[in-house]
Amino acid sequence: LNSGNLPPSDAVRVEEMLNYFPYTDAAPTEGKTPFAVHSELAPSPWKKGNVLLRVALKGQALAPEAMPPANLVFLIDISGSMSSDERLPLVKSSLKLLVDKLRPQDKVAIVTYANGTRVALTPTSGSQKAEIKAVIDSLSASGGTYGAGGIQLAYAMAEQNLLPGGINRILLATDGDFNVGITRFESLKDMVQAKRKTGVALTTLGFGVGNYNEHLMEQLADAGNGQ
Figure 1 (cartoon, rainbow, N blue to C red):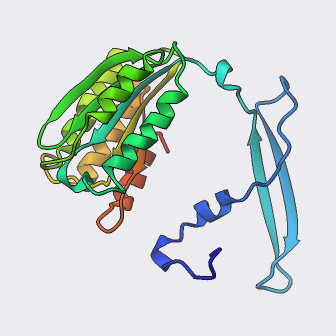
Figure 2: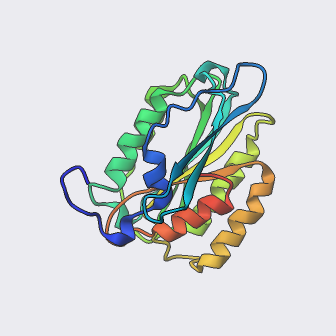
């Protein structure tokens, strides 16, 4: 849009277009309510006599130091389809940025999958940044995509180290190309939906162009109580 071109229609996501803009809604008064409600009314630009109503919720912003400790599992697709520059190399540089934000009370485990699954890093304190980054740097892409097995192992790792009242989350980084083990979309979704009851959320980080499976990534995150 900035360069004067329209994006392909399939790439337009209404919620992402809306979420792009900073609305500068006022935060709630500290200590009184968890969120503030704002509304705005305007004439419809496309139908005379109609009006548009915008209702916005603004939650309290938590300072990073006030957040509860985190139990994170990086679940990384290292199959052959992840070898191009905009996939695994981008996953690695992205996750290292996240590692920089970890606190000593946070713990990270790394699970990988290709033809099989592997625990690349057992739960490690956020104070051990060099060790975590070294494991991330050592990853390389090849083989098939046993995504269902990776998801099962990641949940097992997260449940093993569950923090009651903490942040318990799996971050799945993949192009969504599952071709080994359970590959049926509904079966994968049902498995994740059943696992959300454990208190562990699943957030999906989609990488790639071309055969990137956005539909699967979005549906898994919805089923897994994540983003």
